[in-house]
Amino acid sequence: MDITLSFLGKVPVFHLAGRLDVTTSPLLEDRVKPLLSIEGQRVIFDCSGLTYVSSAGLRVFISTLRTLSSQGGGVTFAALTDPVRDLFHLAGLDNLFVIVSAPSDAIIALD
Image (cartoon, rainbow, N blue to C red; front, side, top):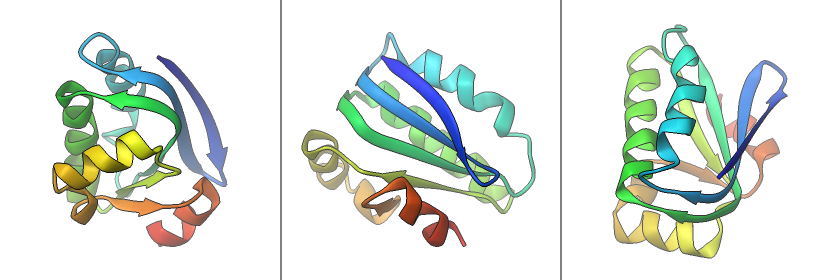
């Protein structure tokens, strides 16, 4: 799992590549954790390189969404690969998550 961070304006964009599973999800959780206490924080997950997400990875996504939403922030998912898009759909998360085509579109979706 490769996690890199960039910013669109002041919004952090986590670029995810590889497999997000029980072994690698703690890495993402550790990277996101400092942002969870910031009121109104918005986060973008760029999933263009993500090939697999396990239930442990979904847990990180859902807990991040819940925490940030409860504080007036939000999460947007961008550039889902087909396997990840299928998983979100099968799990019914495509109705819960804001999903856009590209990270640049995520800024508009977060406003």
